[in-house]
Length: 161
Image: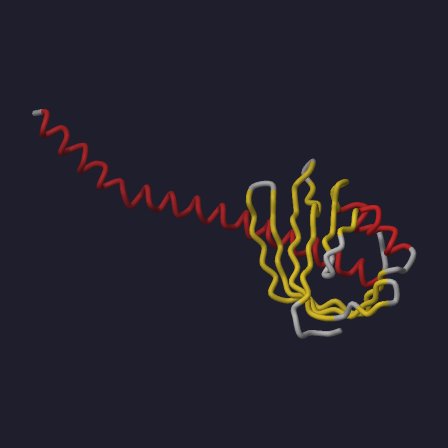
């Protein structure tokens, strides 16, 4: 009798297996949709940051970066949030074109990492910084809002000056 109950239990579990698999697939779809939405949010915010940079506008940096935000420039310099804002305000850094491609976003809980290729034309303190760069932005969710905590750019060798 005990053997018969075990067999019946196994048959019941096997019968439920397709239903359980379908439920798991539906949960994965929901998570995927939520993640996709977050990816779109990060890309949209990053695009707004690019637009602000082209206009020389500091409001994006002021509102959408963490207090301890840092940038590691293509030359290896480390720039703080206040320094980045000041450089944009006083015209030390100017962009005439910023074309972004190969955008990819990975979300890990309250952190998202955006990587991309950037072809840009610009100057820093009148020195030409035009070229192709690979960038990485680290986004964190603080008080329900996505903010950039860190950005690093690396110049692709053999491009621009």
